[in-house]
Image 1: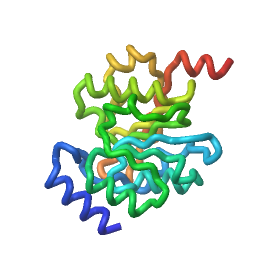
Image 2: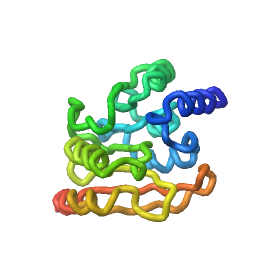
Image 3: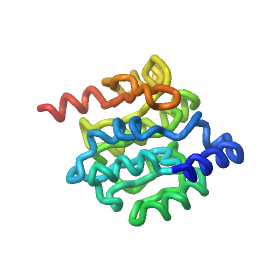
Length: 192
């Protein structure tokens, strides 16, 4: 929607410390990030919901809005999400405080955050909270524009994360890839 783009750009200019993405995610990127959401498998947590492009892709998978918990720290985006998606759980908070969210056993955490631009301490806080909220063996989904995994090596090692990566999504601006991280130990336990 043109109005989503306008809202995104306005917030980028007014709150550059809260909106650091280069542009809203494309529909193709959003679909890839939501591709494994199972409407019957329980709650999903979305980090950095922004204007709701990824939110829409998650709901398009058939997940009831009351099973989606969208975390966003920009109050204007929070208001937009609540109007656009009735029944959605919108949490006005930092993703760094994810561990405080009163929710457990999520089937996925799907992140629209610019993780690589964040300090290691904040990445660690986000990923530690993510691991605490996910069911064993479930995915933390994160996109990146760069050629390397978007979680810093020290945090990947501390949490024992393995990953798989999607094909490049050329129609996103800039082109991006989607990584699906999970704890290697949890993945082994889930397979047993």
